[in-house]
Image 1: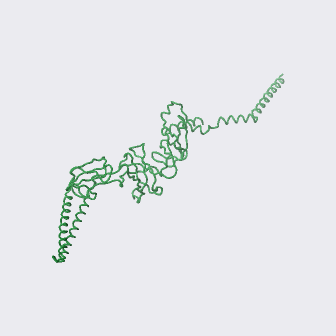
Image 2 (image 1 turned 180 degrees about the vertical axis):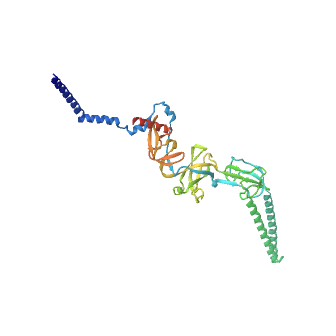
Image 3 (image 1 turned 120 degrees about the vertical axis):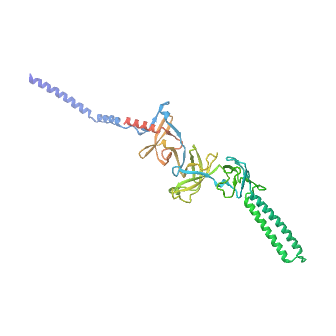
Length: 395
């Protein structure tokens, strides 16, 4: 009986072993193995890169309130980051009006900010210099006329030997001296009044030699004036034309040419730009700053910029265009730089870009971005954190 039980047990175990072997063989067949590999690969394969570079929020999402995008145009690329510059008078259209005589101001006709025309009276000055100069000229002319008459009589008497020849020569010499004295008196008066100001007695009308705006006035009532005063009495200029003096590092001198366009920004008008053109390159280097002063002619339509303003100037290159983006729009990851572009409302795509120049407030992008695309200028870090979090959850 015991032997019979053992045989039954061995038969059951053999049947189980055959079934197990068959199952193992079936599971390790090529088709099954291939199916298993496909399933594992699908489970472990990363999502396409585009899935990590794109974020889309539904309309009304709270995140959209913290994201701002703006269409940025393509513009010429500057030689370097904006440089320090100073606005000064355009001396070609500026008159610094002083006097070449002594006197006292008796009346002032204009105030700073007034527009004036060429020949308009700015002030009236009482000048004893003109009184004495006019008197000297009158005396010289009278003496010249008297001596001319003497010479004429001498010429009439000489043929009949009414007078000696030496008397004629003396009369002629006296007349020539009188003419010279008249010329001297006229030159003195002209030197006192080179611009032909109107004179009544010894009162002089000081006039503007050009049309423009009175930007400075040091003249005051009863002020004593004289040649060589430290400050001009009036400064008249055309405010639509100014000079821009750009401090250019010497390493950039070879990249700036006459005629290069300059874009000017001012803290007074943060959302406006002004145009200028390089008209003179620096001729010397400041030994302390190692910079040259480059002069550009600035168009100041509207008169918003004022002389002695400090501004930022970007000298543009002649090579291609780029897109100027604020630094708040740029996300850096190691040596790579990215921006976020809004393709459709609420949908943002990350783009790798190449920076052409980098400034303290903005940079210029070359490859990776076209002019006119809407770039995220506020909230780029929020989008980058969102993409990083999604990538980490999917990995």
